[in-house]
Image (cartoon, rainbow, N blue to C red; front, side):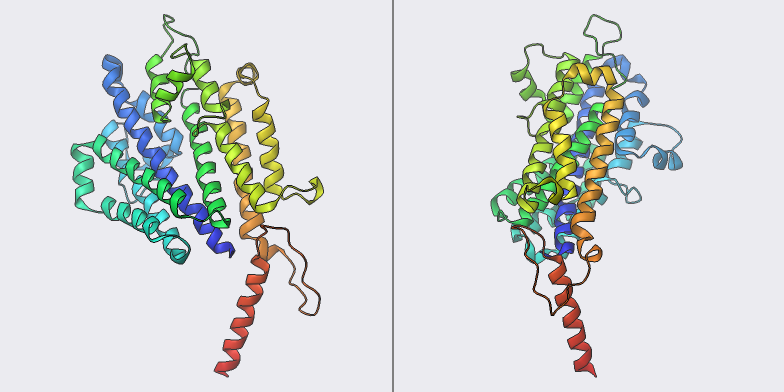
Length: 357
């Protein structure tokens, strides 16, 4: 597989997952405000954490003097000048899908392109203005369709593994960011005056974990149990631990799992993080501090993402050219053949130049 193809599939999945997470976050915050009553008078305490989650505080402050729900929702949904808006995430996913049009199914392409056409239409602007919940739900349904179509029509080859890597890395990152929005809230239960049960309920809903957590825990809104479920539970498909396990499975399929000295950098980095999470306890998390622990996880995710790029996308540039007179080296099963693809492209360019002469 060409490195550019794998990179496009990886980012196509990441951007679609990013749009889904943002839609769910905006929808759950809107519901939280309806439940908050008088507490919702200060909108900044609800919408400010969302801007922090997406990393858009500075960009938002350049164009808005106050944090208001309507302004934040518009900024994160359909603003073309915000690269992290739902609109631009879907546009980016569509562009990546276009560059690998021959590598994905027609149904998958139509799903992404259809969502992009909707978001750019006057219908979407009117729906977001008048019925925001319906707008967010429409984006969520399209994202679910994307995942279902991908699972039903993508062969379980390298394309599938890179799609899973992109989706699960983005999901793991967003789950930690969502948890971090509650890291400054008291972990005590009511009737403690500092307890914020509505905020913890919103965290579960923004992760689509409300019903799953209710079945899992008898102590319905215990903050410690909620954080443990979203971080360390390996059965819930949006938890951090589940995403790490899914990424590790995809990487092993791509790179193999041989001796340590022969192991690819992403496999080593992800393997260490997987082992840490598997044997981590909530007592250790709380002792370090939830915010500090989340920061450390996000740094590790950034390192893993960078290692994906170095190992797979830049593989051809960082590998010496093969001497055509020497025997071709053996490659492990599932290894990328970027080097061979690059040599073939060079040979084709040389042949075209000779024909022109």
